[in-house]
Image (cartoon, rainbow, N blue to C red; front, side, top):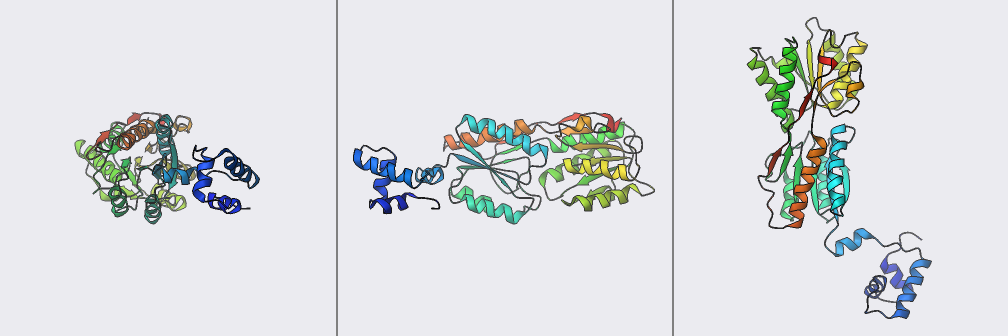
Length: 336
């Protein structure tokens, strides 16, 4: 038999669903012989309680949803660990949902949460997200939402972010001090708030050193690794190729290494490379990658802590609650 429900048990026993439910819960309202009948039938039919259904009846799922663009990026995997550390202490489950950088997928996940599947939402939006309607609908239903890392403008709620503009400034400043004069910035989406801030920090550092900003040095990249590799190899073949590269997301730094290897470009002798990355293996790449390392675990913990404050106290306001946790420049061989 398929999934056995309380209604199926009740039909077999010729009892009401309410009676069966109370018997399974060992209610004092149900006689001993009836409880025995119910338990025997449940065992015979391999009945397994549905904790999700029972949580809906209690109006609490004891679950929080974490909505992410991907988990291949080590930033998000470390952030999940930080979230889990808080959720487990609170006796909550963590439901991880992946959007794969598609806004329609994100909207579908958010719509599903309207049914009470999660008590609260932690979200890092897709690179395509521009319409806040799905998130606003959840807030109107009383579901608390906290952004971390990637935020959606136009939503009045808590945000846990890092100092993206200052971090990009530090990365650019470091490359210039290492002798770079033409620095390319690999951008994944200028629509994302973090991308916009990182580009601004990059521009500010160029200006501070008297280097003219050239729009062609902002290299738009996609989520297609092969397409990015073709673009990077084309850049490497240029007569006046960049002497420094900033990869604004982790996977792009790895693709730069691959392009340089295939085009016989030496790092750091011919081109210096720095990436926004939380890769634990960054120090073991050849050469070791200089990184802007984000406080992923701490950001996850902080986001979850705020969400549970809102879940535990209906009068606690998430509005305008912004926390900025600084990233760290870790200098290694790729920029020496």
